[in-house]
Length: 174
Figure 1: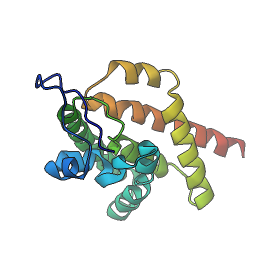
Figure 2 (figure 1 turned 45 degrees about the horizontal axis):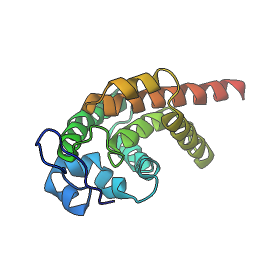
Figure 3 (figure 1 turned 60 degrees about the horizontal axis):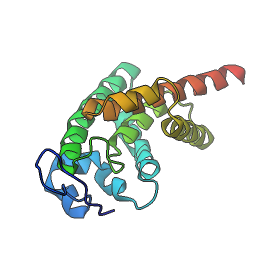
Figure 4 (figure 1 turned 90 degrees about the horizontal axis):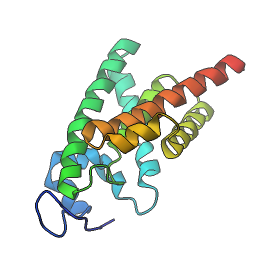
């Protein structure tokens, strides 16, 4: 993905380009673009979401209890607010499609509440992508109104909450 985008803040006709060069220009770009997964030519959000699994494994290895896992996810969320805002400003688009750290962190959160097993992980992935793409109320409102780093991260947090609720509801039914 090497699209040139307008950069209204600089007054130039085009902002930075989403490319490998852009990724390595600043650590925030590398993080926001999910270490390169955001450059996927098709469905970068879906590709980026897959990195939520290794992030979850790292968090699980670093923290054995739920409160500490949540603390690490909050830290990852806050890093995402900064990285997404920085990358969005550089690109001239607040919520560029290649910014996928929001999906990565949100899916890792879903996995914290997902029962063990590949079938459960696959269901969690499908539910998260469904809610992230469809953006039911109030996700759609947050996505439309919040256009800074927090907004980029927040709508995916809401999709994660929907996914967790759906998973818990399915567990209750079964």
